[in-house]
Length: 566
Image (cartoon, rainbow, N blue to C red; front, side):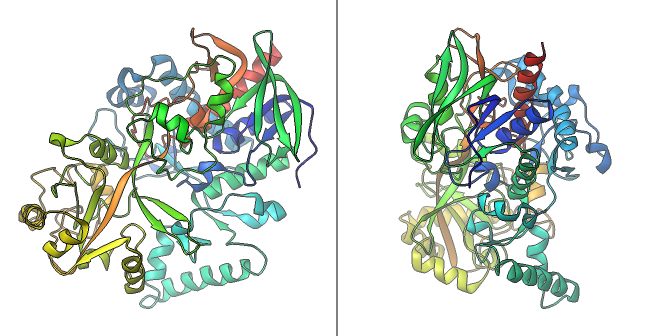
């Protein structure tokens, strides 16, 4: 059941991802009465589906893992990666307020973060890059602490768990794979499975929460403990606008239109527009199809609401979305699985990507964002969308390949559905996916010539710390390079997709929404993916969405509270 509907609050927050929940926790901790509105049945948005990584340079946890950072060092990196796409004012706000936000949220909520010692920034060869510490992760969270409200939490994608309903991390997977050969792993695996079996007697899925699910659960628990009303199934239909100021919202609740006034402000944190066909055609014309791994609830509500009162959408980013190659599979219930190829296959040794001409077009070990940039940059007029990931039998029996686990049963199911293509020879594989057999064979042979000695003369795969971090550390001499020569051979088709939108509402350093003339609209804030990305469409490191989202959720609520006190 939803909480009673307040007709007035100091702060109204629209959306329940990390940005919205941070704004709610911050507002309440600073003495404001807060109302949170969520359009769907479930809490968490894309944040709940994410890896949960929070990128905040110079955070106070870095020394705990032996890493050092500074404002100057981090600014140098942003200058080298983001450049002038974003104002110095906004970059400074993120780098100064981010560490402050982490301390405050940890002190006033259930959320705890820990720095990841070894995790390079994505463009690790740029000046100012860090090899670790800037990214933080939430610990696992016991969903049973939420009681009946556990069912409110958005479930992770079934493709990222066991049995579709049990969350696991990298260490769990290693133990499960080694359970037959290692007593220690067998014990670990048994504990996981017993816990999961117990959970399913009372809950619709496993309650051992990890990654973004753990992050959102901790914040949601904090919101509930603070007594903040959270109204689900309550889409906002309009902003109340009087005398040039936003003074509240009009939303639907239980089939009724309700108007609630906001004495200090309205915070828009609705998740951007990754699943709005209309806004994608307008703002992402190079990739209008919604091949997005973001939550389906991100349909541009915040942007439309803000535009209705004269807000400006920033359109100067280098890229309008946070790109990821996506493969499309079919789930058992008939729905489409949009699988983002982030870090589990492209960087591993023994895989290449080719375009429609059957030739390589990019360094496969680069970040997902950089890889899709290459897909969209049709080299020599050759179409790179769709592209094909190519590997051999050794690869598919060793690593996860898209939706395909390294088991014979998983391969058979993927072959039956058409998701996975197979050929006994490279030439046969080429024919199965409509490529020129001779050209693909030449491409693989050229790659293999260098790969046999651990080299990639064409694209330099494995040359940066980031490449090597996501390769196979046990494979030598290059953790990202191995020949493709053990048949049969396999392919998966990928298309340009995204994990969220970067283009959003223009804001100032206090997260206030700006109008077309560049002036703040009183009473209106934006954060999360409703706010234009402080990265300007670039992707410097893991967690560069959740880090700024937490930061500017905190900034928005803090500004509203300080304005109230003035």
